[in-house]
Length: 294
Image 1 (tube, helix red, strand yellow):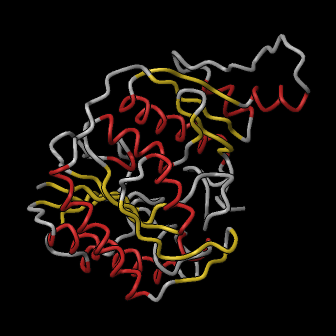
Image 2 (spheres, rainbow, N blue to C red; image 1 turned 90 degrees about the vertical axis):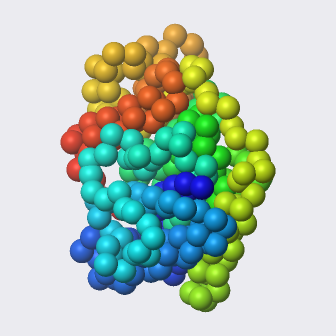
Image 3 (cartoon, rainbow, N blue to C red; image 1 turned 135 degrees about the horizontal axis):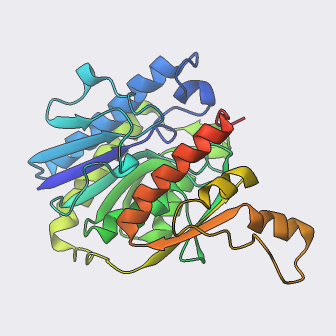
């Protein structure tokens, strides 16, 4: 079996603040070690379930966080950026299972270090207009559109509840319990890594008996509401991107009109939408230069 591990940092064991996960933060180097150990637990679980190939994608910030020399020797690593498919780089239909390690809840949720891709810059995201999502939902929908089942996730309890809304069969390992956005009750590190290893082992073990999701080549709609109307205006220059609230003709309040004016919408197939969203973020970074979590 081939297993794919997408590893973020905010949902890693023991980490609760910006200084834990941002390069230059006073606890960032410790955060890197914690992230590497969580990923190693996931690799051990995958191997115990019969995986013959494990690919890990470092997906946080610079995408150069995992300690290469300390990573489990059975895993190959996708490292650095830019990556055309970002958090799902190198994932394709040849994989039997996908695992999300260190993931976090979406913007607006009271989960540890919750946000959607860009700190405070993205306020909300929707799939097909009515399905609110963040990184968990977008990655889940894209992986399954490729025909790869998502079998396990680790993060705070709010992140684990979020993935269950997409698929109750995903095995979860809550490594901390949110008390606020920057506070949590932590599971002991060894216990948390044991939970990760078990969730991945059981998820991967059951993957062959699960019905694989059928590849999805249908059209979907991605809507993103930004904090800045400037970002929305610039993205409108990309062919196919519209601003649904640019010229409201109804009787919505000024607040509602403002919120819609900061939204963009685009339609396409899910893997292509995921890649296009990476272009959206590149434009937004160039325009805002805002540090996350401020």
